Image (cartoon, rainbow, N blue to C red; front, side, top):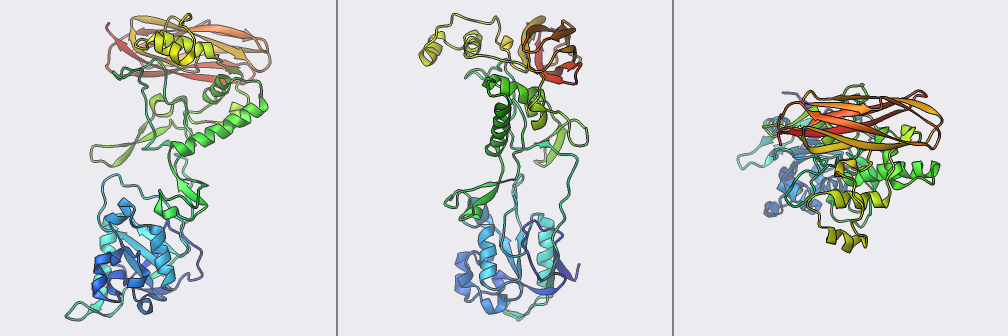
Length: 442
């Protein structure tokens, strides 16, 4: 057992300090109560400075316990920091003694040095060290505090080339078309963007996260963070190409995205294993859509897949299970236009959720760069054959051209197959669209 605890090897709750490389006494909240009657307030949470003895805490490191109150939101790490600071503590330790599988511990800004020990085994080691080092009388009252800890200079950031990864909480495909949960011939999600632990603006009046009450910024995760990244990049594309339609901008973002991480390996996705531990698996278009957004490339995509309002009406009118009268009620347009199959909607992706035999889809591209010749190549998982026609085409600036992609079921596996169509231009443009299909006998 270590002779003391150093507040750096588990630290992600950091604050500036001038107490580096010094040793301080460790005192547990339950051992510095002003009165034993305050036990009803769960003093180990360190949420109420008024129930703790400042004379015993001041100049020391305060040891607190992470209880269920933190999970339900009645306790917060921010309040632990405020309690420790108001009592004159040098720093604090928050030990997690029990945790549910999959519990997330996000970084929280604090005003004094502190750590949250998220691994239960390490928390128990610390508590055992504290108890064996603390001298008590026959009633359990502390006679002397002998456990010590030091405050290091924080952790250096480690930039992993395994980034980006698809976050555990990120929504997955396939997309459904109706209340019977039948899969639609439209790929979702569309694209992947940063959305995990983003330092973002926050309302000081917000009350839905106790750790950020009164703060102007917060560390946030979710689609609420990924969407602003995409919106901002879309605004930059719109600024450069003010006459482009929303579909054209979406196309530019999707066709120039990447399916590789910083180490040039295929993107991976976080998911739960059988033991509810998080593992990494090779990601698919149902995890990342077309890939991770690449802002600079999106400004010069070479080709775009454009679509107008009428095309989306045609998609709805062609999709089985959607009532034409409902479409007219919402859009004031009749179903006079269909596109044969929903998969023919001119999107920068191809999805066939029920492939029987052979099916051909068409796409139209528009050249938004100079004169360029594109060679079209395809690849697909073995269960499905894929072929593009024509194999190459030359487009003048502003010109549009159709091409077809034919998919043929080779074997029925009961799972989706993934692939892509790549249009490689003679001037360096690369236009990539994902292909997703599942083969059936009938």
